Length: 356
Image (cartoon, rainbow, N blue to C red; front, side, top):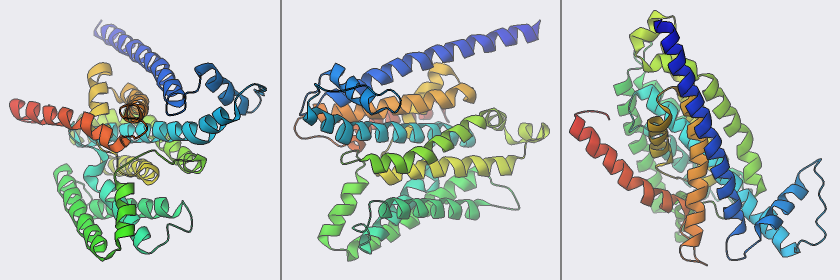
């Protein structure tokens, strides 16, 4: 009788999660269409759809009456920007949900183990060496290497007799982040004003000037990373119950924790590479989705990825609409929206005497 009741509850939650995912998919489609159509040059939404459909292989729609200027704006400028925003938002949010599950703390995000500071260090090295003018891929590659080095150092410092204590991992991440920040600051003091400005432009995360090359660079690794994390969702559920409970059912805790951390960190690093540092997406979106769909990671991870994509595309569109023709970069918009919510979480944690 108890098993039947439990199964009914699971089916109800699964149905609710699918409904929410379906609703968010429609919302995402609407926000994408709005973001591509609106701007300094207004493109009618029906022509936007025609232009996109005309470039899809095997669809083969003819576009005899479409304004060439509209085609350039939609296909060369706005669509790559929106796609990069979707990928980055999905990557940050799904990785944030995994980090919060691994650490058992809703205030955790991918930057807590040094991903962002490592990527920033890699980026500043590329700029200081003057390599960014060679190819648009140079800075992302350096940022990725820096992020992986920072995460590897964090894990190495926290490893103790074959185990990874969560508190030690958190403290190691803070120490590595501070170390990387110190190296970055030291290099910045030696750089010319022009290169410092280039670094700051990258640091304030944004989606402007994103091209199809950035889409091609990010789509494979981010999609693969999110799929792997979703496939590991059942194991993450067991890990979230506690280390002893996971060991009692035969889960290799250390290996699983390392795998989850590195996949989440690599996915985040790719996102940071193509967009710069964008804060709060990996923190607030998974937390909100956990309140809506529950803590079951099989539903939480895909819904967080979808909600992250929706949130970032919306913030980017909002940043372009507030004061045209100027725009507020998406990293600033997410901070403006995310900082108050983060303070709310901190306040709530203080009131409950721990994590909320």
